[in-house]
Every structure is written in structure tokens, then in C-alpha cells.
Length: 145
Image 1 (tube, rainbow, N blue to C red):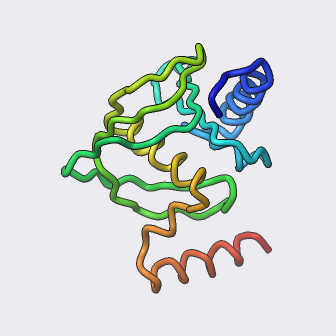
Image 2: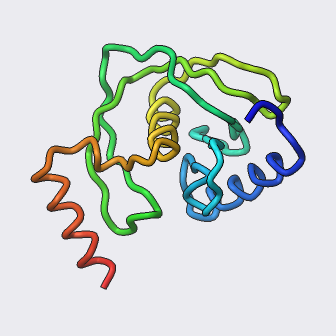
Image 3: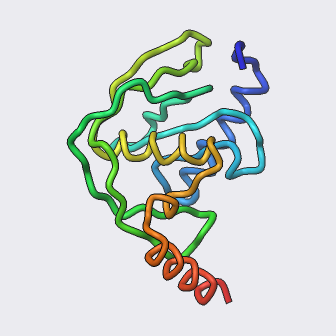
């Protein structure tokens, strides 16, 4: 996507409403059935600070890792402790249609990476070893019954 249109802005608005209703700190467009490279993240304490991203790409990631319990509305009732880089630099098209490079740290960085995984067709549990992933998926099936 090379241009931010009113349609894209409407999708972002819907994504932010959905993220707030969950509640969550991020959402990728495929999670709401929109197969576009769009994501929103708001890890602020006060909320209302959502970053809108089109075509996000991680340019740099810190060597220092940060563990965090991650979950997804796509797999309700389960979570897993995932280690991701504590800080990342991401390039994306922002809400104004300009290319932006921004540094994200802590929960912001975790959520951005989580959303970029969704855009690539990956889930947080793909970062687990086979045994832990299989246990998590079995638990999710039990919760879903």
C-alpha cells in the first residue's frame, strides 16, 4: 500500500474501536478479517495514543530481550510468556501517509512486534518450542469448549 486513503483511515478507526473493546494494546487488520498490512498499537497508560501503521517493518531490534505474557483474541483464554527484543525501530506509513521511522520500547515494542507477526501470518505461540506450543493449543481447545 503506497497511499493512505479514507478507506484505510476508516479501517484504522474500526481497529482502534475493536482494540479498545477487547481491551488490548494492539490489533492487526487480519484479526478483523481485513487482509491488509495495517496495524494499530496503544500501550499508553492513558489510552487515546494509538499509533496507526501501514506496511510496518522492523529495521532494528535490541539485543536485550524482554519477557511478557502475550495473548490474542484469536485464541481466547490462554497466554504464554514470550521473549522479544526490548526495543525496536520500525518503518511504516503513518496516518498522514508519510514514511516514518519510530523507536518503540517495552510494552510498545512487544505489541508492535506481535502485530507485525500477525501481518506475516504468525501467532505469538509460534515463538514457543513444539512441546509448549502443543500444550498451549490443547489448553485453548479445552477453554473453547
